[in-house]
Length: 251
Ligand code: DGL
Image (cartoon, rainbow, N blue to C red):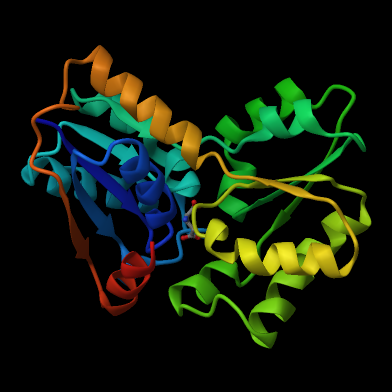
């Protein structure tokens, strides 16, 4: 039986969990939101690494045989060390620069992510690999995580905050926008609304479905689960879990 541990700085990883449950509904999932320490975006690498180790120990204690780091920022800061330290598979997030670069018609793609992710060598390597002939415009989604953590996913405040980061990417001509933070897919309806209002045909690229397929492959390759698990989801938080439960019920 596979128990899949999954964590994020907060509720954002639920956008990955819902894709995993769609593809693999019969597994058991244990989700940990580090809500007491959210956001991770501007925190030091050492801090994120030590939280990631603490949470991994917790998830293993709950029976996890594989851990999904459903946080781009923690993936960039900690995944190499986690893989070196623990003897279980880890699946990390990868901003979907490749499909965006291959699919663009205007030759301009936008990347929305936290400042931590945009500085991480993992992201910089991916960007360099796919930047030939493509202009890559990057920006942090300032205030996006706070909106999602407060469950403000629509309305004038959300439109204003999201527009401030999204509009410069649209102004630059981006027709593919990479969602490089797991909180951002929850703001997709408002992003589409802003692009529609401007009459722009934009595709937003979320890596979560590809992460779910990767998880399936890892489970198969390691002979873990897929058949006889006791399906279900357990939610844990280092802080207040009200929003976590509410957002999960909408997923
Ligand atoms: N959801 C996370 C990510 O993918 C972290 C956002 C944050 O805590 O700043 O980057």
